[in-house]
Amino acid sequence: FDELFVPSADAEPVPDEPAGIYTDKRYDFEIGDIWVKNSGGEPMKVPCFSWVMDHLPRYKAAGPCGDRYEHYTAMPPSFVRAIADHALNGQISPQFQSAWCTGIVHAGDKGKLDSQQRPKARPIVVGLALRRIVERIPCAQLKGRFARVFAVARQLGVAVSSGIEIAWHTVVNGINWFLANADGDADQYPVALQVDYEDGYTRASRARLLRATDDIFPCMLRYQRACYTKAGRIVALHNGSIVKEWEDAVGIWQGGPLGNASFCLSIWDWLSALYARLMPQSALTCDSHGGLEVSIVDDLTVVLRRRDVVSFATWMLREAPNYGVKIALNKWHAYIVRHPSEDPAGSPDLMRTLARMGCSASC
Image 1 (cartoon, one colour):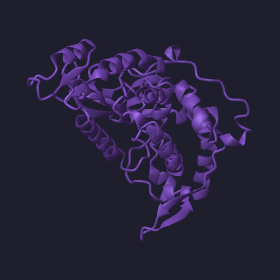
Image 2 (image 1 turned 30 degrees about the horizontal axis):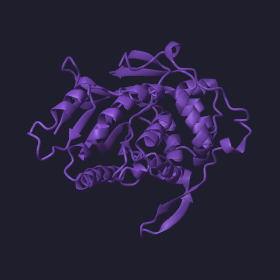
Image 3 (image 1 turned 90 degrees about the vertical axis):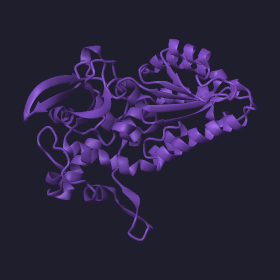
Image 4 (image 1 turned 120 degrees about the horizontal axis):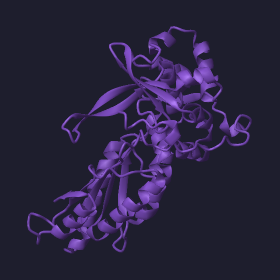
């Protein structure tokens, strides 16, 4: 993990606090009520904090100080709620902020091998159990708003019900539509591009996260600033002892309840640029040079015509770094639908062009 955690000396400066952040009501986070379904399937309104505490999973990982959910469910609810209210509104002391921004890194299996044929690990950072409880509150309370905002940018991996199924149908139906309207023209045949971001979470821009939060979810800005304006501390444990420690000044914690939403906000400008470039709302017209796109957090799939693949791929490689995103060249792949007149190898010219760009391809 040494190459993943970036020290503060190499970190992008974060924006200054907006004027009036602690007096302007739009920055207030008020713990309120949420709508849930009762045992009979009927909607009912319940207090968000009580619902979160009643639905905490059992026997989850301990935080850096050994705390678990069970410690907080045994405390007076009013005490835990007061801590949550202070944290969500950025009212925590520097000493407590230091503990809040300390996490234990766990190696999640990516199911892949690196260049030396070793298992690749996904860094899952686990913070205080209290931090995870607090983050479950906005996840529950803002779920509807998260879904509406992210769905507009075709980001279906956060709070969108059946998001993966919707993404699958979008890709399949897009391929079928392009095929049905190609009229035998190979240039009109569909190509599905599978794109992943290199070290997406650990390289995510905190400055972009804070700017997008201020613009879209200002009630979360105080909390995000408490988590991501100062360098944190990441530790690795073995047999209960610290064996490695890193300064953590760049990126988003993937292991927290707010991790996915925070990551999507950190690439919000990029998602908006993709939408503007592909114009998915008009992609299914015969004269369009756009395409369909769906994202499941840090996995992007784009469906477009053959004639447009190279120009889009060129644009993506050129523009992505300007938005703090790096395309993982060892992970992106083009699935080319073969024209009946072509041999089983498909379109060799297109495949060679993509290969020169670092994109693998298959038919």
